Image (cartoon, rainbow, N blue to C red; front, side, top):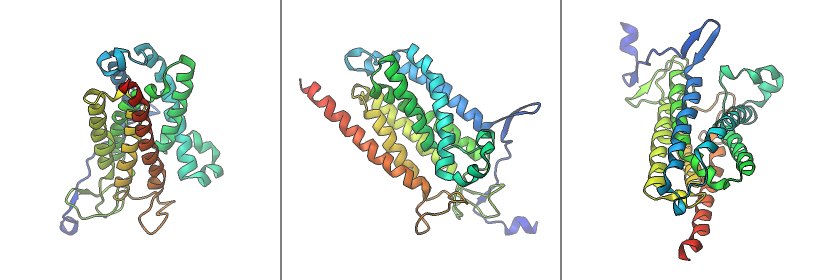
Length: 284
């Protein structure tokens, strides 16, 4: 009874959800992995709908086909997983993996970087577009429009796994995470799911279906990159930095912010470029 009385009033009980979604003998399927797989499959389905809607594209001619997307799924999966893993190693924990190189393959233990995954899938798109003769920017746009689906699912999985939690706080919706100490913390994973997932998906949906921005190759991709960068920077003010990295400057600057600022710049450039490229054709 005493422990209950002395608990912070702002702390909510953490939901008792097993991080293992499915156990088959020695094989454990974690919600984190389920988030990636379901995100890729839902993204593939939604991307097929985008390229099947002729109204969204310039002159009613989609820049790629559903068959192109069917073939790209494997490329995307490899780019996301390989890029995400390599990015985490390089950006966040290089000394550990240099000391224990076999841990590089232990992806089931976690350790993925969105920024690395973005670079990996971007490389996959560049190679695939060149091989198929597809407009690279239009492929960027199509994939960018679906990425928030996977982002939202994976962030919810981060919450279930009680990882990447937020800073100590007294807000009434704080949680005491099982492995985050006794203090109530921001559920920053859910903030990211809301901003990088739901909100960004809605913005891109409005751009593709109301603004018809798929007719401006590169605009939707730029909006996604810029939107993610801004969302991540905001959430980093509530998220606890990785313990082995900490704050880079002054108790507020994190590695996530440093990696996200260039995304905002590149995203704005891509949108401006798309408008400039499309303006002459529209005027003509």
